[in-house]
Length: 144
Image 1 (spheres, one colour):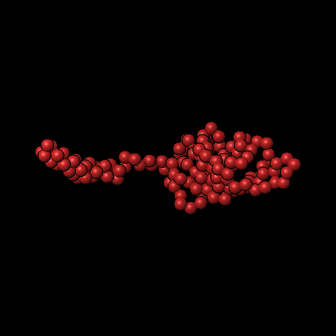
Image 2: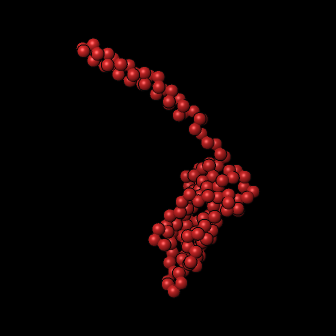
Image 3: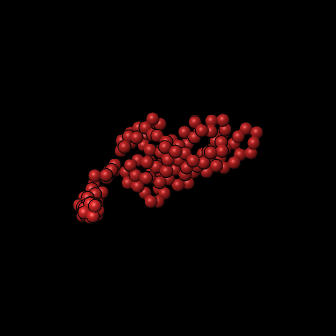
């Protein structure tokens, strides 16, 4: 019985040492490599910037809001987004205001944010086509 416990402790220590000295350095090398790197040619931006792609993303978000979310109200969209960020890999976050004028009620301003992805990667020839965009989230319209 005494030897079984001793062998169990030695086995656990050996497994921990093997993990720390062999397995974890190997995992760190894999993580540090380019194995998980996605080089799409669209770099993320830490600051809001208006580019061709963020402007088209803004237009697609506005069209989606007008055609699918707030179809019963009169809408007035801003001419440019409040902020537009590229997340990289042709994904964008657009934030803006819009004026909503419901029938027989006072109009009001609503802030919204839209996360959108361009599906055609660096091919910008059909950037106007809504089928080339997918909206992954819109916030700000929970109460409508």
